[in-house]
Length: 557
Image (cartoon, rainbow, N blue to C red; front, side, top):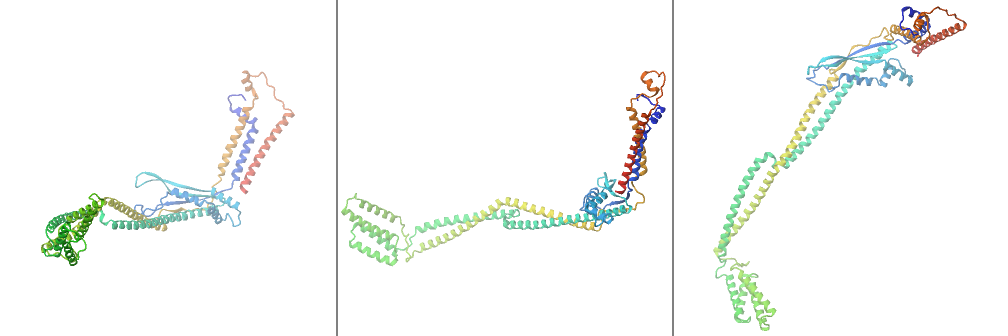
């Protein structure tokens, strides 16, 4: 229709012309809303409110080991409670399941309970006393349970409340026990570590007792005293050496034997024999006499080695040299060799100091020599003793210097061991304090004095169903059915391109018609109108049938 404006008469004309398009959709939708309003089963709701009550003991005096937020704990409990096994046991208590129920029935009932259960936290704005800032906290939470039976809803709600109360207490006690157990194990581990560190520290101190930092003053004092002792010993050794040199000089200038001593006589005879062998032949009577006297003196003094041996060898070598000269010339190798031997023996004999040879049988008989020799021996003994003492003092000095040099490293290791020990002890005391606090917190949770849930509004038996809201559904169905009828009429009218009435002619030709010829219905038009009515009637019947089918399905399935 091409009219741009409608009047009330036009609307009435259109509704009269399109009454079937208006009534059929509206009636179908209205009947469907009736089916929904009266087809949905009544659901009874039971509600419970649980208060999150803070711990009775102030947190400044005792802090709980369970530090989760209430909203987080409620969500965690919900996950445990809404598990399949928990809800299945709950459904059996509410007589919604029997022992013979199939697995599919169990799944269906558990699913229905889960869908009909809501947990809504209750929030409040509070001021934090420590910071003075406002924050949102969970002070309580509501449990809503819907069921087709008010008794079942109440039973399920009661069971859920019991689960929330019991599981919250159980989980808090378990968490507190877990914390206390952890701190106990940690304290035991730290105790073992402290014992190990103590033993290690004691062994180190025992091994380095003289190198510890607190021994620095003592070591320095010992070092000074030892150095003084070393200097005194050095002075004594120098004095003894000087004394020995003086005594050795006096001893070397003193004859050990007197003129009547056999040793002196033997030496004189050996010198005479040496001189005579240079002048006479070996068979000369003087040489024989001297050899005989020398032999007698040797037997007397027991001389077996030393100067007398050199004299005998010198005499024998000279005899050999004399014999060689009678046979060979001076350039002969044997003569040259014997000459060299004689020169060597004479030089060796001259190097022997007079009186140096002392036999095992004849002792010195010069009193001055004996006195100097005794003093020299005493000085040698004292000098050897002082040298030994100096060696010991030197070793002690070296040890003290090593101690002092090693003290910084020992001090560093000592500080590290001590620091590790003190840290372990400090941490041990902290853990023991926490363990004691955890044990008290566990006792507080077991006695119900910690943060806990309190039922302040138990679930009641519902007297009226909470859903569906039938008046609201019917009213909404009426609004939708009327709107749908108007919409269908408007759409049909908009799509209809026919020209109707005098206004339609004026709109197209800009002038009124000259005359009006009425429409005469024939039998074909009447048949077509009957078919349209039947078509709309079928649509209405199908809508009504769908509404009743929905009611049956919802109520009895």
